[in-house]
Image (cartoon, rainbow, N blue to C red):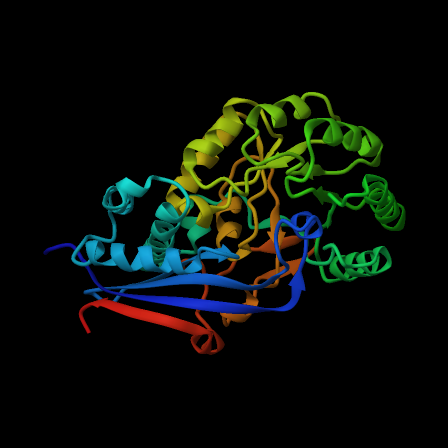
Length: 375
């Protein structure tokens, strides 16, 4: 009997409004405007035999229309293909867009399809994705970022941290990178004093510093026992992060802004990080994420995937080394299900695949859509 084949693909461009504008170091210094919405490209794949899979990519600020448009160009090349051949299909799509490269939008559009195919494969097997991949754990330690953005007074940051911990979150992250470095240090010290020594705290500079400033800041907070300092330097300064990582007691974390498998491998090869922070939708989906995670495990690195807990939870659960997952409630309105959080960790969904169903509310945020294949 012939293998099942992809019969239909529905693409949707969704604009998700945020409850409040979001600011980080790049906003504080005038490089970017506050973030007010998130652009997403959803791919829903259906096979001839009725199996389904859902995946998505996202863009913060400019680029969402380009991501959706490129996905529209790629979708016809999947119709009639065997959905089991995920690795081959990734490369088939990459070669369709070879003239625009293998990073950024070119692979982010592929990532929406790749993620949907992994969801479909796990659903067809009747397994949660983490179990299909070989879960190392049933729950992953989690930390919250959304309570520590700029524009939030330190008293409110502390209150937000208390609330997150009371709701089962295991650690908290706060933004740094203001023009006044002394004020940054004051805020970090205040949060540590408020929470005590036992609570994991991470800080994130969003690429704001040069090497000298990062070193001075890092040495000033080394005694606070932070879990990591995130993106202290430009995301592509592989050597600089390695230089800093060798000189501070506090671990360095970075990788979220890199948009190709190759660039993340450079961080690993140059010993630039203690915590690698890959973002699956940003560099092509689940397949390249698994490649990078394998390389990171060989290097005995710790893993802390960036954002998108809905995709990264099962991937982190399958990582053999130490790992964290970042808690953001931003995407919760997109899905009917909620991830269980308790005792400092996110717990794996019980449903097959990613265990997610697109909500009716999401359908109202669609600004463009197109269907390919059988009607």
